[in-house]
Image 1 (tube, rainbow, N blue to C red):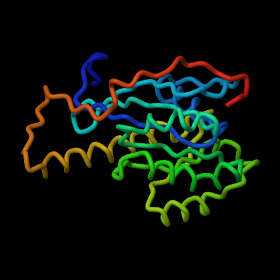
Image 2 (image 1 turned 90 degrees about the vertical axis):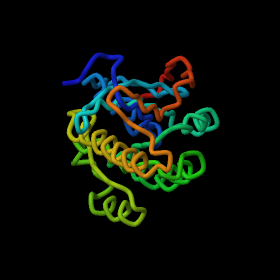
Image 3 (image 1 turned 180 degrees about the vertical axis):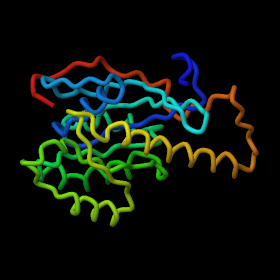
Length: 214
C-alpha cells in the first residue's frame, strides 16, 4: 500500500525528452493523473509532476520533468538534465522526423546527463496503427544497437504507460541498491532513510503554454 504523500524511501528524477508534438505532456498526465487532453498545448520551458509506486516493499517517488521539445528552448531546458537518473526518450510512431531526431536527443543526454542514466526509447501514439511510419522492428533494432530498453505506448488509451515508468523506476532502483551495497562507505539504507536522487532545489518556471498543439 502506498503511504502518505510526504512519505517515500527513494526520490528519483525522470525526464521526458523528444521532439515537440510527440505527446510528452499527455504521457506525464496519463501516468500521474490518469488524464488525457486532446487540446494539450506545447510545453514552454519545463513542468513536472510526481507519483509514487512500490518496489520490493519500498516507496519510490518519481519526480517527472516534461521538457520543451522546441529548439528555441533547448538552452533553457538543458540545465534540467542535472540530477536526472532516468529518461523516456519519446518519438511519435506516425512521424518519421521524430524518430530520426532520436540521435540528436541521445547526444543531448550524453552531453548533459549522468553517464549512468537509465533510458527507455518510447514510441508513443501506438493507437495510430493506420498512420504508422516507424515499424516496431525498426525501433527495436535501433534500441538494441544503442543498448536502450524499448516500448511502444499510447497516452491516449493508456496502453503501456504505467509499464514504461515502472520499467525505468525499477531499473534505477536496482542500480541504486547495487551502488549502495557496493559503496566503500557501506552506507546504511534503512526504511526510515530517504534517498533523494532528484534536483530538489531547482524551481520550475511557470507552466505557460504556446497555442501550438502538443
